Image 1: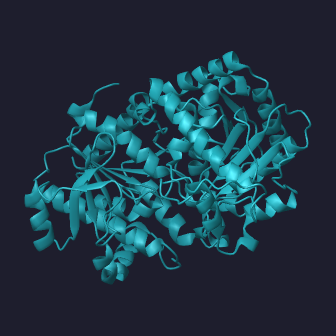
Image 2: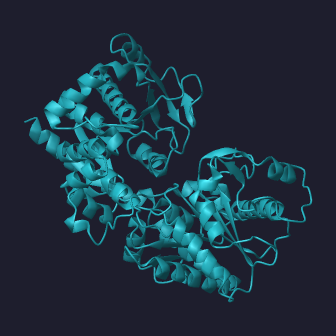
Image 3: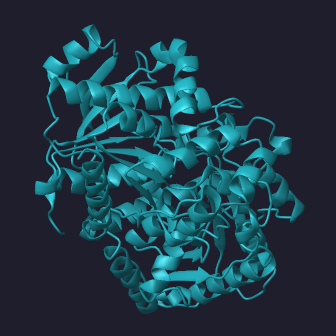
Length: 552
């Protein structure tokens, strides 16, 4: 790890996902924190939204004495409602949670100033735009208040803002505190994700797309405008992968100044005997649940496969995953059983009481439960894409079927009522994971899988997949990571390749599987934050140099 902590005095990093797990950015920040703390001890300060009111924020350890003098002034003089403490993750960095609701009456004034100064068009905003922008503004005010209280004018200060949601924070700081070096990171462009999510061909047509035109067509003008202007005006603009860099250059008309790939921390992976114990526990939990739901015994050598991530049916390749599992079901080449899990949060109505009671009381079930494809009841189950495609493909989950499929539509936080284990505590029990993404700027899920020693399938449309190929992996599943070529229109070829990889893995003996597991560990070791943090340090250098030029 290259140490450059003498070049930076303070780093403020803000995101909607600080102490607020919504998606992959939480993983980026929470795993990066320890390395940043080692480099800049207690000089890296995370800023998140205080959306919890009187409820304790997850992973937040309040410390009323932390920055006590500033906190008092921030409340009395700057009218900021904040909580200070530490993030309960490896590194335990300082955190400031700010309530942005008091700023709603300043919304029109804020939007006008952003239009007047930077050309941000908020006129057609809707949905989460207002809350995101007002939090971003509040984060900017927190930085300003802290900066002035501690008199940091002669210090080298970085303000890093994540995603379009924090764009106005970056622009506010650029305007109000020009001596601060601003960095803006897009983990996925809002318009690129929208193009892909609306079933438009993103990759074959990328060079012909105009971001502004597409934003108008897809009713994305406000978010796109904000993201584009933030990218254009900050001191350093970064993104997470080479594939997203191309997207930024075309759709935002601004190539990133640096690519900052997402790393992972080995702290999250248990070692030695604990790894073996946790893996056994995970398999027991998954198989026990399947036995109750399906009303049949599951052999201990059953291959457990999963996909996971946000419920983006096409973008995350959930549709291709189901297609591949169906092809596997009809292959006639399996010598052992397979259970495929879809671990994707959906709109849950309730925990299944019948399944919960069967697990808790160890009730012997001899036939499949009603709807034996789902662990929780959903709102509008009849309209759910996953359940409808499973039904359309003719899955039965009956005992005679070698291949079974189960949808686990909840956040795996250890409190779902059925499995009651966190995502990582279940991931470790898998034999294979599959992430056949169509739109995946980086791809934490396959990296996490490799870090846990679980062989994984990804695609060349994922940033991680491209990185794995650069590292010499990706040809087939025996290398630990298989990277499947995916285009705008080779859906069925991708499903066939996944099917074949599963069959190949099923034929491996214990020695072969151990070798594959070790290749996973080895590849993941090259993607640790201790290796990747240097890309952020390069971005900080660029930002500081540009800020210094501006303030000469």
